[in-house]
Image (spheres, rainbow, N blue to C red):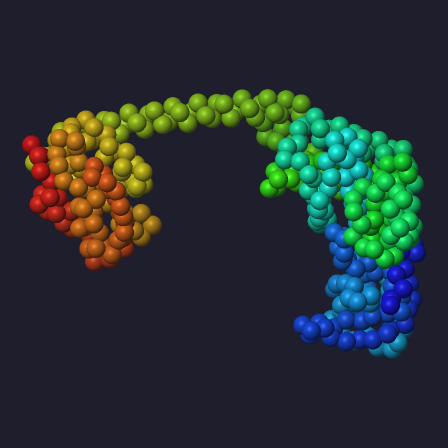
Amino acid sequence: MTTKLYYEDAYQRSFSSNIVKQEQDNNGNLYITLEETAFYPTGGGQPYDKGTLNGVTVLGVEEVDGEIRHYVDRVLEGNKVDGVIDWERRFDHMQQHAGQHILSAAFVEQYGFETVSFHLGQETLTIDIQTEQLTEEQASIVEDLANQIILENRLIETKWVTEEEALQYPLRKKLAVTDDVRLVIIPNFDYNGCGGTHPNATGQVSAIKIVGWEKQKKNTRVEFVCGYRVLKQLKNKNKVVTEVGRLLSAPELEVTATVKRLLDQGKAMEKTIDDLRDQLLQFEAQTLINNAKDGYVSEVLQNRTMQELQKLARIVTGLDERIVTIFVTENSDKQQIVVARGKSTSGSMKTLINDILPSINGKGGGNDLMAQGGGEVGNTSNEQLLEFAVQKAKSLVVGIS
């Protein structure tokens, strides 16, 4: 059993120890076990500590059957090691984990929303709380309470107790273990079984900021940051707001209103553009009808999307229900074709497209009035495909005048 120095003093940054063994796990990864260690292994939602052993980088740390395995990429010489913890990472984890306790307790204190899971990521943390809906007001009230607890700089105590002793406390959640229970206590606020590392007082958490939340099945996933991460978030967001304000030539407090005004203007411009496109299509459709031959509007059109071809075909057959339209275009190395007929004619456009597409190894679909599809660009030119489609249509469609 490895002596866990991180439980004796979470602030210990370096240590010396003796090597117990150097072996490979079942995956062939080399690991070292020590008589004692200050390296915290992954567990309870908290990632492992980083650092070095005799200058060799520790790649990972995990606990297996009571021993702490330090994964390294080469064998260490000798029997003694000097270990150094990546203190910046350790203290960040201490801030985040303690902040999670405080925020989770605040949700219970205010609304009875219990935490069912916790994840400590590289940039943010998340907790899943037992509610399907969280309002802005609720989040704000909980955040204010959490930061008040931090401001009061309450002690964070840890103690080892039996399961029976632990049950004498108002625990926030059920115990995950029954032997050697470690309690993390913020007196008169939070009592919780936990194996993670924490600072000695809530003031060292510095601050808590909820950055968002979303529904997660029957729970709500709350994303937040603590400590130095709050400052990092503030710096990043302030940089973005400042840059946006500069681009908009607007003061910081007016950025939101300016963006909203620009978005409204953009939507109005998009509608105007759509209206103008519709007018152009109406004009183009009428021109095509005027130039129709024997009741057919058949054209090879350049730089058109399938949606544009379909819309143009609908307009043509809407303006003159006696006409059949056949449009061919070429996009991204694919030949595409749209066929449509007016309501005064008869014959299935779906049948027609199914007769045409095999010639270009294509696929498509549709209904009696309109069908479409696409295939490979090969030996058949757009003009040849159009002529082939017209000939097929003349043997199928009835009622053209």
